[in-house]
Amino acid sequence: MNIKITGKDLKATEAIKDYTEKKLTRLVKYFDTEDLDASVIIRTERESQIAEINVSYRGDNFRAVTEHKDLYASIDKDIDILEGQVRKMKTKKERMNKEDSIRVKEAMTDAMHKSVVENEVLKVMTYDIKPMSVDDAKLKLQEKLGYTFLTFINVDTGKVNVIYKLKDNVNYGLVEPED
Image 1: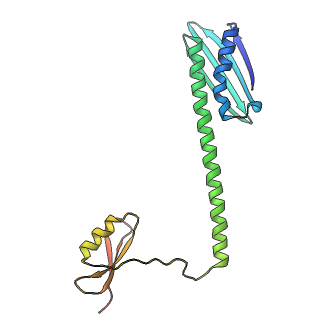
Image 2 (image 1 turned 135 degrees about the horizontal axis):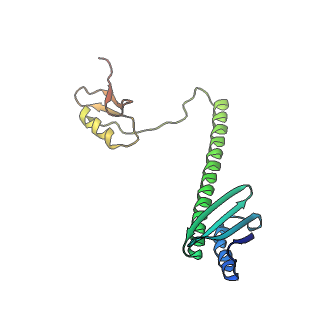
Image 3 (image 1 turned 120 degrees about the vertical axis):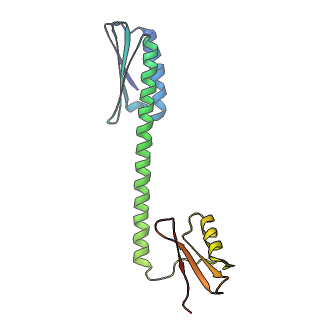
């Protein structure tokens, strides 16, 4: 890690340099240390101590400027701000890489399925058909989250019926065989 500490209207003492370097090591866990550059500018304005920290890593730049009566507190705030910026950027990049890789995989599997299998039954599910009333079937369908339909034997007619959720997700439809 390359660190450059500059003081304007204020001398950067060894204690301040050591403290700043120690605090900047918190960012090392996010980066390769060889490619990490940090520039620290400390200055005073009236009664405030201002610390400005710029960190660059492979084209990504992070910047924090805070002022406080105590220079050490100002440096601490800057490090907290920079760590938050770095974490946010890393999370965003990881999410983008993950989504991109998932999309590529989905596109490849879709292409494989489209070219290999067409007009075939790919999945078979079995379940029990129980006799119940339409109201009981509606309640059962409400209990099963994620299900959009339920097949049952209508106790009133003795025939197989299907109850399904309409697109409004509030109402239901019923499929009955003709007599």
